[in-house]
Amino acid sequence: MSRYFTDKFASLTPYTPGEQPRDMQYVKLNTNESPFPPSPAVAAAVAAECGKLQLYSDPESTALRAKLAEVYGVKPTQVLVSNGSDEALNFAFMAFADTHSPLAFPDITYGFYPVFAELNHIPYTQIPLKEDFSIDPADYMAIGKTVVIANPNAPTGLCLPLAEIEKIVKSNPDNVVIVDEAYVDFGGESAVKLVDSYENLLVIQTFSKSRSMAGARLGFAIGSEQLIADLNTLRYSTNPYNVNRMTEFAGVAALEEDDYYKQNAQTIMANRRWTIEQLERLGFTVLPSKANFLFAKSDRIHGEKLYKELKARGVLVRHFTKERIAPFVRITIGTMAQMEKLIETIKDILEASL
Ligand SMILES: *Cc1c(COP(=O)(O)O)cnc(C)c1O
Image (cartoon, rainbow, N blue to C red; front, side, top):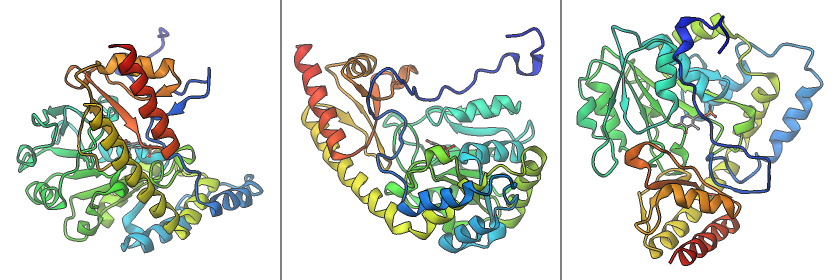
């Protein structure tokens, strides 16, 4: 730390992204990326915009917001687009939480929530998950705090039924409830259909996972016009050109070929079923995932050891050191070939440690 770094941020612990090692070719199952390339129209859209890079992007991302509004059945004024959904989450924390309206989120969830809270000096309560790692909706009823729930949750993959989300939203009319739906396309039910009924509901999604565009950095928020206007106040106060022109039109192209990603999501779900079955056959406990990853543990090998042994054999998964989830590894669902390699490698590891 330099002696110039302000006290305001000196104690900040930044988010740790999943590792992106360059030392060898891994079967990369650690950051929940899609194993499939973006839809074919995306590359052409990006190429067309490359020739116009001397021009700023549209600060309103008009074309992309219009397309998102059409696909999700809302008005363009109910849509904000962002540089990855992480940016939308940060704006939402800044806009709707402070000492008078502190944050509440599960103790085991997306690691960025406490970081954004600390960055913005927002007090927060971490509510323990139940014994089975699910969220207890009762914990959030009439809580009087700004609620953030990833649904499906990460890294558990577990999903709350939409009716439970609705009860949480309904019981907290004086606070915003943020539903982070980064993984909703892999079998969850979106809360977008409720945004016209509840002015305090903000739904955040991303193109990073199901739409195969993690490297493009594109996310979006859908809510009431008033909530979106507040987010825009922050966006125009930080970076009005937050979505670059290549990404904007890559997004439009992806939405025009929406069947492509839906097909891929079906493939991921089928590969997920196969992988769960194989892991269970090997004695693993696997949480019932509605996401493009599995959270699994074995009585025969600790999560950290399994992570290390897999890495040594060229398969990358994610391990978290937090005590309650340390026995687990989080495994991104990839292609069948990748899943077969994973299972073969786990078999080798288990046999070698007998
Ligand atoms: C991956 C992820 C995000 C956001 O990713 P972006 O790439 O910034 O859109 C948000 N929330 C959760 C729970 C995620 O896993």
